[in-house]
Image (cartoon, rainbow, N blue to C red; front, side, top):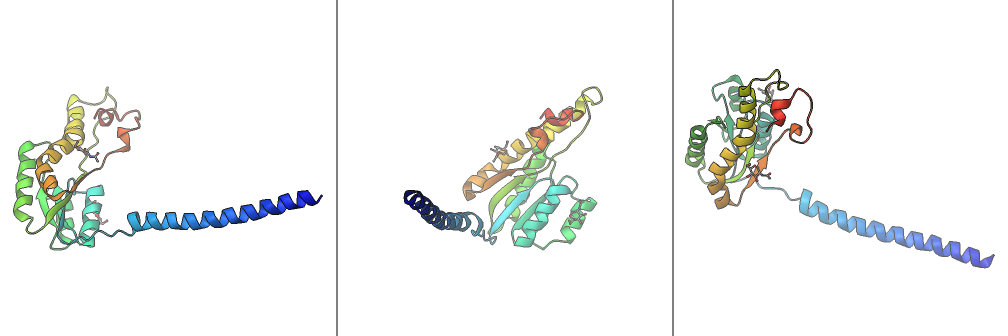
Length: 198
Ligand SMILES: *[C@@H]1O[C@H](CO)[C@@H](O)[C@H](O)[C@H]1NC(C)=O
Ligand SMILES: *[C@@H]1O[C@H](CO)[C@@H](O)[C@H](O)[C@H]1NC(C)=O
């Protein structure tokens, strides 16, 4: 059975060589991925970020995180004089600025844009983050038409209003638009009808 032994030795050698090559290529591939995706630190100097819906939740958290990293944060709040905005302002750096913003109002969006333009200084608008969102109502039977309208106005038209207004600034700086949405945009659940209507 010498032939059989040869074949199994060959197989073993082949497997070892293959494993070694795989390790090498995996190492190179991982290195490339890490270098280009994860090791690329963005320098926050001179970069401003405009975030909507910073009164609470993800907006609150994102504003704090980016402020701590050194970005210039424009934290847009529906209630700029409310407790959420006050606490955010208090617990962050001098760079963070609270801006009043109701994403359902064209006038309010343009006012916020003016504020940002006047307070940008030497910074560029590196990103806008459309985060503001609401969830109102239940099923069709137990929701008012207004609750449907509110969801669509804030969650669907809000980001469009804000993006359209800030687009000239973003184009100039070659910045980016980040949209935060609900899982409800993909998966429908009972009694969350107004949210899914957007
Ligand atoms: C904002 O985040 C901070 C830190 O996580 C938290 O203490 C605070 O309660 C949050 N504010 C609101 C209004 O959710
Ligand atoms: C975010 O929403 C705006 C407004 O609807 C849209 O123009 C933009 O393409 C969206 N961006 C992404 C990355 O989905």
